[in-house]
Each structure stands twice: as C-alpha cells, then as structure tokens.
Length: 409
Image (cartoon, rainbow, N blue to C red; front, side, top):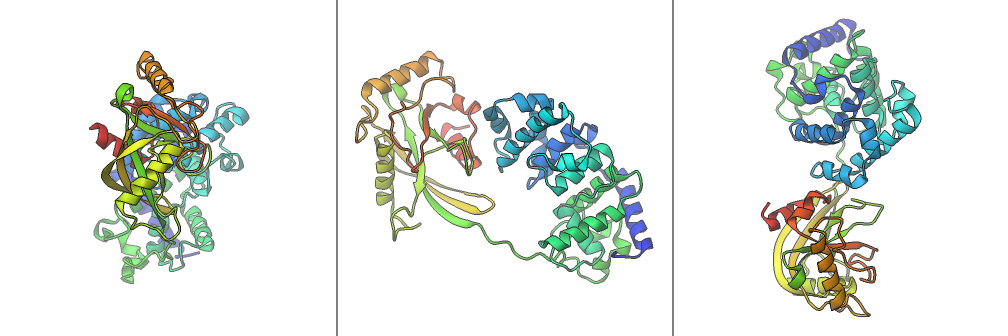
C-alpha cells in the first residue's frame, strides 16, 4: 500500500477537517435521498458543478421521485436534459429508474451488486451512491480523486490503465475512516475540484500539503500520468435551415433523428456529410454544397431554393468533432418532390392543421408519410416549427444554439 500508516492517517484526518470547514453548499448535499444523489452524480459526469446546479434543480422539480422519472415520456426527460449533452446519460437514467420500479419497488437499493446492475451505473457511480447516500465504505474514484491520490502518494502509473484504476480504488478504500465514508469521499472529490486542480494546483492552501509526496518531489504539475486519448474524428457536414413560405411563413423545417445511435430521437436541422461524393471533403465550395443539399432535401419531399451561407458551427462528441456549414433555404410552394412528393394541397392541409392546433408541438404540422427518404439516408420524421415549439422538442446543443440564434432567443 502506498504511504505509511501515519501518512495515510494524516491525509484522511486533515482532509475531513478541511471539508467540514470549507465544503460548498450544493443542492444535492442538503439531502441524503439516494435518488437525488444518483441524479446529481450522473449529471456531474463530464460536466462542471456550476453548470449542473440549475439543471439538477429543474430536473428534481419536474421528476421529484423515481416513479415520476420512470413514467415520464422520454421526450420530456430529454427536454429537461437539453443543453447538458451526453444524452445517453439521461436515457440510461430513465431506464435505470424503470429497473428500480420493477425490481426494487421504487427504492434505490443499498446493495453493491444491485446498484451496479442498474443501467448506466458504473464502478464510480456505484461507489458514490453507496458511500454518500448510505455511508457504506465504498471507494468512488473519478478523475479528481485519481489526480489527488497520484500527487499525494507519488503514483506514476498511467491512470488511463485499468490496473492503475484498480490500485486507486484499493487505496481509496483503505483511506476511508470508519463511519465517515460519505464525508470522506465527498471531501476527496472536493479537494480535486477546488484545490488540487489539473493545472496550477493551489498547493499553498492544500490541507494535506505537508505530506504530499508529489509536491515534495516537485512533480505536482506533471502528475497524474495519463496517456493521451485518441482525438475525436473530424466530420464535415452541410446543414440546411429551411424557412417556410406562404401558409408556413415564420416556421423552420426540422427532422427527428433515428430511434437508435448518436443523439437518438432528438430533433435537428437536416444535414448531410460534406464528403458524400468521393474526392470531395471539407473544402467543398458553397455552390456545389448548396446543390447537394437541395438535391437531398428534394429527395425528402422538400424542394427548396438556396439562399446562401448562414454560419459555421461545431460540436465535439467523445469520439467525433462535427464541423457544420449551415445554409439558408427557402421552401418552394407548391412542393413537388421528384417521384411524387408533397402536393400543394398537402402543404395547405398541414399548415391549416398546425394553425388549428395553435402551433402545438404535437400538432399535425409535419410532412406527410409519403415525403420520401430523409436527407441523411435514414427514415426520418420532419416537422415545421416556430420558436414556441422549441419549448417542447429536445435538440442537441449545436442545433439548439443555431435555432436560438435564428429565432433571437
């Protein structure tokens, strides 16, 4: 085990004392409700605390119990999550809530095997729930914790390796004082978030500075050792912001993504790969780019006239980096897609149904079923929306930004 007994006792004692004096007042810390702690831990994955706070408060207000979350329409859950990104977290959270209802009568289990069997709950989240909510002596090792332990105990193994994580979990478990698992694990996370930061650690105010082996060796800046992850793959895409005319004036065309895969069932602007034609890539001139988009829209039953480049946008996923070139289009009325698409009568009927429904997001303001294939070679649902409809439909962050900018939100 790294460090002698005295060094480990010093670490745990000083850390707990510092936490009691300095801990932040966070909404999920005001309760020991396992559901609240679980939601907060899922939200905090890959997201800053300051960002999470308002999302957590809205989410708990909208879904105050596990039953409420389990029984909610998925679209409501995604809308409440909108802007946090990594939407599979929200889907997994709801799926796990349904597991808790079905298997555990709506009560979060306090058994390690049962908690870790929940959808989307890995070793870290299992440890966090059990320790924080139930005060069980389980380690909760995330990036913050690995950084603190690497520096304090001068651990120079690659933290990206499974063996190093196992070592860290064993060490963290040894450090937990009896009966103090909840506070200790939160203190360890807090130190990594506020003091032992990735860059420019604030060693002079660190409660365990005196015995930090990394600082004494002058190694705090280079620890932890972590092999570089493979950078996200760049993708260049052409997107269309299609403005309606006539009966559809003031509305924009959006489509729903497929039921599976990246950003499943969320809404977006129609878009296609920029490099769909062999030999052409990110440097495709605007003229040919708009021609290709127009052809894809026509194939989906939406003849539209290019209006020029609108803006560039980008978004990074864990494994893909999207570079979007967005073009404005004017929908042509009457709509007549090649091969028999949407007739003028259908367009008028669609707009009338939309107006009769008061512009509600669940109205019939959609392209008819015979609208043809989607612009990205998958079956898709299309819809004409106003700014008000965005209050009910969930969009990925990049399209949310584009549409909010367009509607002046």
